[in-house]
Structure formats: structure tokens, C-alpha cells
Amino acid sequence: MTVSVLTEILLDMTRINRENLKVRILRLADLKSTGSPDDLAFRLGISKRSVKRIVGEIRDDGLKIRYCHLRKSYVTEKEYN
Image (cartoon, rainbow, N blue to C red; front, top):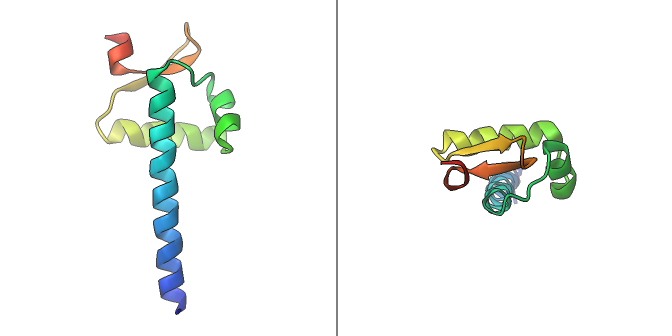
């Protein structure tokens, strides 16, 4: 395999991992059980900044998600309408 093929494979794996993280965050938000951004970062094995970046991407994708200080969890639109 060439370097460009390996690079492309790694980029695809990164995209897949990021999409999997989005799905996990959305599922937890639907259940109102993400915990704080720090808790979620620890649970997912990523940084707090990465959590916030991924939540931003979820919003960019057109989905409604926000952090609820009362529940201490991210929640989806259907949870706060």
C-alpha cells in the first residue's frame, strides 16, 4: 500500500469514529444522561474541548442539542420544547 492509501484509510477511520461519537452523545442526550461536559469527556475518552466541538458539529448538522444546567446533561430538542 502507498502512503496516500494509508492516509485515506486513517482519515476514513477518523470520520467513522467521529460519527460514532456523535451518535453516542445524541443517545445519551435523549436519555438526559450525558452528565457534565467533563463527565462526558471522561466517559468517551476524549477531551472536554472535543465534546464541545462535536456538540457544535451536531448543531451544524441541524439537530437541536443544548446543555441543561438543571439536569446537568445535554438534552435534545424533544426534551426541552
